Length: 377
Length: 249
Image 1: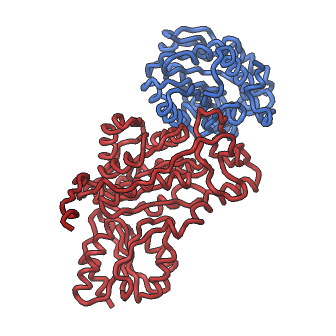
Image 2: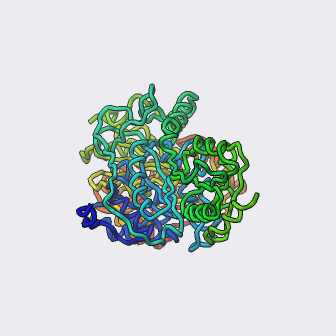
Image 3: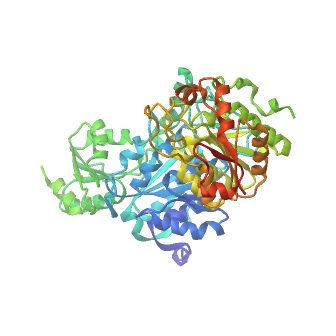
């Protein structure tokens, strides 16, 4: 016990959420960053510019967000673990190429530091309005993975996790933070485990998957003699463009969706607080989940049976957890800095009444605002 | 080496229309690579959307990245910066590279990105049905300018030279030997190099401008192109209806 106490964690460091993104990415082996400045994500880029060269990677400031994500995808095919960071309006510009990354099964990480919108909105103020943009923003049918940390420690860890998921599922993975988390300073333990998924060198394997299992095949790399055919048009397992064959398009659409759906339960991570006996359960994510947690404690102190379901991943949506708690609780209250994006999903699966605490004025949600709704009968 | 060995024979013949100039350009590129003895297996061909983007993808038996409309240079930037050992060539059309993708073009020049960009300029949007391009000459008929193009066209060589391109050249598919020569020089240039291949689209541009027969369009190219220098291109003083061709270094 005494020995335990003597152990000083040498890696604990005070930092903000944007810094934690950079530390988490570099820890996960990130070696390519392309981006374009946008508030409130810019510190990620500034720090990447300083850190990336000494980490042996490549940093480039591109001419816009369209070019940034394009460079990230190009670098990924050249063998990089690539990332970009942006905010809502920049993400909108990236969407077409994100669709390209989905269709071509390109691993990459996109950090979205959400701000208050729509449009330019309030650039320095928080929002959580990109819930649906990351889910449905690009054209066509697909599934996405979007992680939603609520602390600086978790920003650090989940950035690393985003890289391993991107590699494992061969797809773009979103990390959704917000202006509050981006500039919140907390002590972070940097000495945590990070899974690094290696890209094995493979030759002569169809780059776009086994036609029988739909499982992702190892990510190949340019310059290894594979004569890769990469296209955003409908393509077969070797990459040949087949733009009028229904079976080829069906297989492609099915393939990029099923790899996520297959592991949906595992990917849709949640954390529960006092849900066992709760009559009112708050459902939230990101910074709003912190307000919700505080509100839950206030309610408990006042003798009310309140609980919290915190979503660690928004997509795939944790349908099972919401359905289960929707049948055990009397009410669910969704807390988010938008006009009800997550609430809509919760309403789709919950059997009990669903209320919401929504705020779209660039201010965080105060625990008392949530408490008011908990107290309503 | 037999040029056929650079092609994926299983996708031949090409999908290009009868009389399309892209076949001549494709041949010029492959012969240039062959004569230089570049390792085809180490080459990456990046293209955007449009007919010209299909020159490398899927025909070339090398790594190919067929990207989104207008963005091939941005994709190429990421690949080249991460692996500078790759020989990266962008092949795409005028609509792709100078209209929707114009911003990426000028920034790649400014960065002196070590890639070669080969722009097939047929002066029209071929694949989508003959609409106005930013390279369509003044007064010419397109699907979206039935009364003639009221605007000026871009001289893309002049544009990239103004941005500081170390190498820019222009020839038409009516002069394939010169075209091949400048492609070779562009591929050997260290830093950003640009080749504009003036080409023909009898199906769209030709039919709408009273040149439905490919040979008529080749004749037009021959009369259109006059020899010029870098200084002349940058001065933008070509006589009405004429285009300077040459190696602008």
